[in-house]
Length: 405
Image (cartoon, rainbow, N blue to C red):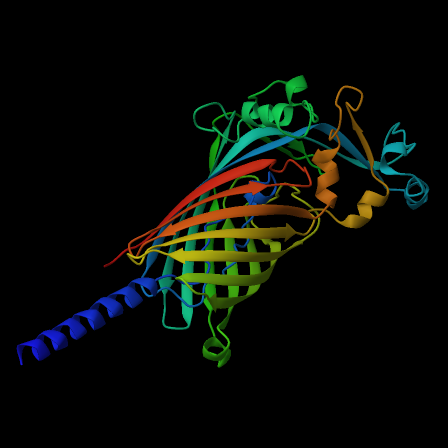
């Protein structure tokens, strides 16, 4: 009789332990990334959309604090946009670096003009709260801000000019291929004159509030959630940009899909694909800087994440994310613009300050997350393999935790 009672007691204990373990594992909610948006020198003034790869709304209100640091570098470059259709047609017959355009004056050769130089380590700070409305709806509120710095040690250990040039000199890329040493390391030179004659200029230690964002996500209940472990969500987005350079309202939409695979030995594999579209400056509160004449920013993002659960019910996850965004300026202008810069002094990339505004911007993100039922700690690095330097290299850290037990 005693043995029977002991057996029953042990069996009940095992059920409790198993249930606790299952509960502890259930807190992982898909691919719960931090903000991995780039510190692009135009993008920071708009409310770009973070892709959402979660299965469902969170069960509790979540607070997240994000910090990221990116090294942006573009030497001084000038751009002329002739207004005469005949001149545009003539220039389009030549490669951009061979175009024989000579600006004399606006009466003889009318043309729009802009110039830009970007050299800074841009730091972004985000505070986000995600509020579950019910089992299918979630509201997110984000406040974002920025600090312009020289990027000196120890606060920019991986994104400083010294670290990047050491990597170019000793590992890959060649000795200073883009002119950082020519202009000087650890400098802030952030100035842009748009084609309307407006100037955007930031100096070392300038700090500003970028804006407030409100995001709503809907998670439909579908049969494929249970039968195929496939989850969908759809988002609507509203951004209020508050900087003096771009006081405006943005709106956007998004759609995301996640596939979950449960593997052996407490492993889990997630595949995700997302797309979003942002309409910039749908309302301007005053005259704003021209931060790209393409009114829409579209993004496509894909990620694969492998997760290993520990015996205590925590997890380690590693994700590889590919992110590509549409160009800031209309592609047609790249057929006839004339660029001028210090091409004789710089080995390459002198044109990138304008050239990359007409190119899709892509990056690879490598993301590590350690999760417990009490918090998620995430580290990531962003690498621009096309070398558009906007930013060249970026790192970030995020902490998420529920506001109630």
